[in-house]
Length: 251
Image 1: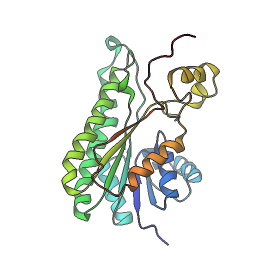
Image 2: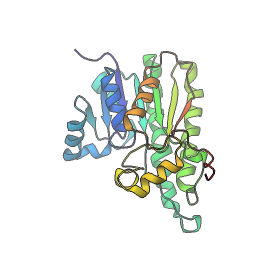
Image 3: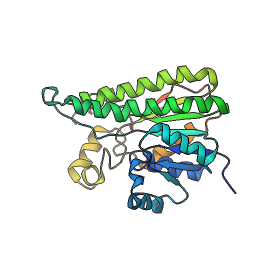
Image 4: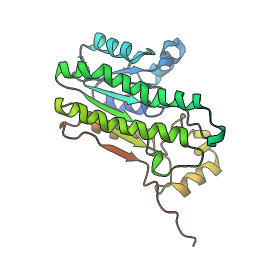
């Protein structure tokens, strides 16, 4: 029997994409999972083996992706905009403007265009919700982090602005803003879990003493996707195990 709720998860191959797909499938959604890598048969098949029940698309352009989703399902109830790009840390005098442009394109321009394609369809169907996966990394900027910090602050600003634009239509826009979430995109297992030095760094810096498990952010995404009131909009939920916090004084 077909699911009566439809979810679209973008860039689903990494970061919060896999747990978003799993949580929404478990909640009974029909899940359309997008990633440009899925244009390659091997990448698509590997993803489907890990997430049976998902339907995949490899579109590069957000307009094409949205048109495909509506062609497939006739309507979409929630879109998880899972935007990630390698965090380029470099001193500003050594930074390349092209790296900044590429980061902004992935983390700000692409989701902006996605929202522009979604808005008229959500308004026409009289419902819809957007959950953006951003970052709380700018709570405590690191040296050399101007490129990803500028993009992530703009990403969170986009959430707040879109929420205002779409609130009169009952379309909520909220975000989960993680840091220290296990993903191969940002905190790979080999460096931050399997390597004793990396694991010790995490225990020292994160009050929870560990990286977040992917399934944990999946639960937050599930909550925002299923929220029954559009009055909950413009929220940016930090998901970082208590980080940042003042360092513990020496014993």
